[in-house]
Image 1: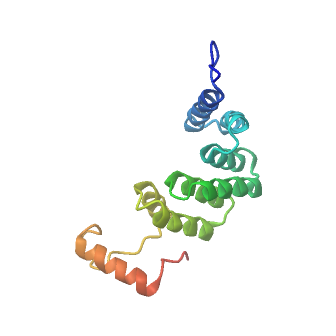
Image 2: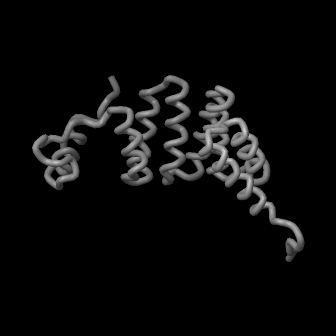
Length: 161
């Protein structure tokens, strides 16, 4: 069994770069974030989060949408139940002008990752939620939720205009 004396383990090094990536992304420095994402991905090439963020940043910083989509799809294939991976792929589609695919991705995310508030908020920002069935009740009212589920089963998902 080897010990990492005086150095960081490869996992720690990847995580350090990934944290730097997220910091630069949050600060609006996509180019710098992409460098750290690629470095983290080089250390841990099968980490779905490193794949997904590298894809997102390839779209944001370099407008490389096909590569970005491929990386994000690969990440989703590895971990289908995490909302952030759907959000990243949907963001890539949005940046590429593929709005209906962004919506479909988010709708799949609602099913696979559960009713995550970030996915619902992303769909709301796109302005694509249907009005509540009973408009005089709040959309979270149990009656509206039950009727909305029935409407969804009968009519299918809301389609983008």
